[in-house]
Image 1 (cartoon, one colour):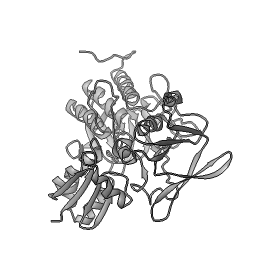
Image 2 (cartoon, one colour; image 1 turned 45 degrees about the vertical axis):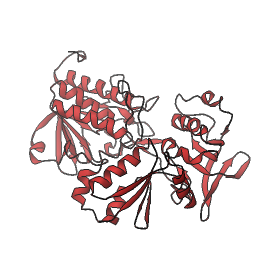
Image 3 (cartoon, one colour; image 1 turned 90 degrees about the horizontal axis):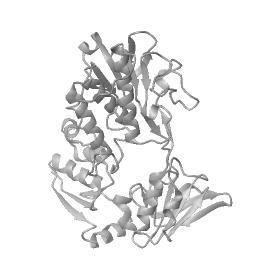
Image 4 (spheres, one colour; image 1 turned 180 degrees about the vertical axis):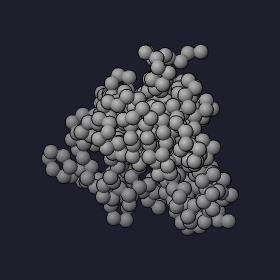
Length: 413
């Protein structure tokens, strides 16, 4: 079996994941923590690498969290890999669709197992509704791929988004909800019994909650992919210390970008904050960065290209004054922009011009028995706690519908 050397930083969640992967695969490794031993910084700097984790396996280098590429290189058996992959370890929660599932009529079918869908499953199953949750890729949602959650109410410890949503799913499953991995291809929601045609068969339910989430507008710019881990980063917790007394850029227009710019200012000599528009998205307030003398806020500056030949050199930026190349040691991207994954609904459920489902205060759509929430509807802020609240409202609404109640009944013990 091949041996590995992995460069890590203290507090880096993906470093921990890679170590767990290697251990599960039976791969021996030597860990080199660059936070504890600064000389290891020089090892990576000399190679033009400014990111962790970095894994070297007999001359091959894997920058960042790249389990699939590592599995292929190592020749890891796919069944073993899936069992031990933290990003795909849902085998004890999600089951494959079975024929008996297509023969019954569920009380509530939930499309999407993110925070909205999982929360709805908790409330519905606890309320003794026969509940099924359908998700095509449980490890790929917006929350599941979030590297750090530290502000979810009641959860004091810092954890990854996948760990948080995993807790929700397990709680729902403990109450009796069924989770299956499948994709809803089309729907027929007008009747009393709703029909969801999946890639495996047809699920029937008396009520449906659409919690499909949204996908990021994640088209990469020229040079971004090439220099990822070699100057391009996405996590200050993981990579910020690499830029001690260096010049970095932050490109983004949301609260995460603002917070990361301030976090990087504690390490970097200079932070250029490139904001492509004339305002920040959501409730983010640029005044929070005013106390940092080393942050230069550049409104209406859009990063067009990552520049460099053999090594990262900087970014090409467009503003009202034209295009300018900024010489940097690194750049961090935190761009907002999402589009709801609601195309499969066609014209059956009312949606706005951008695809968001139109709902009332109880998250009811234009169709009786059909609810929508989370990133599938237009919300003032996109946060896990908001999506989870949507799930609770929708599930209680479905409970009232199915049990023929005139008002919603909150769940208190």
